[in-house]
View (cartoon, rainbow, N blue to C red):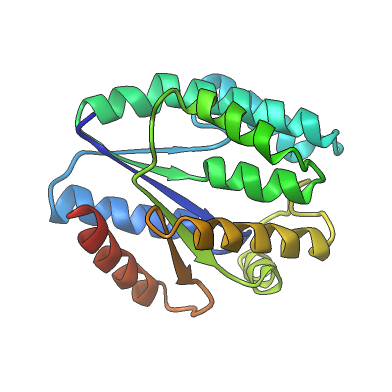
Length: 208
């Protein structure tokens, strides 16, 4: 596959959507790449149904969350990611496997070997070129969402200790695979400052 696959990860309020949009604009208009944007969950028609259920229903067992997210991933990779990578496009995605390992472990699912094996199959041979982790204290992230008038969904309404665990899980993944993960401090409110760091990183790492 000739394209590049970049996934944005991070806790709530870290600015993933904003930074993805800014990067897409630069790549499409400034550097003239073809860009395709997706997200998990919800990047496909069926995925939108998964997303609505997961973000708005009462909490379900951790194993149920795992299978719903993996089903969504199978569909997203098969119907969106693979065709766009084969077409040579840069795929930008909001959340991916890193979120599964971060959030489902925080939910109580501890069978890491199962997660690894199941995720490998769900990815269907596709490898992520770069995970960009926008790291932020969840308390700051939630304060930003509140200031921007953004409603809180079922996942976000969980105790702050849960979100602290999610953040730790993210950082552990990044530390364990520094070739495919990069951590950016998303605490500064200056989105242009963070954007410039991302541009420098993808230039150095991926030649974009």
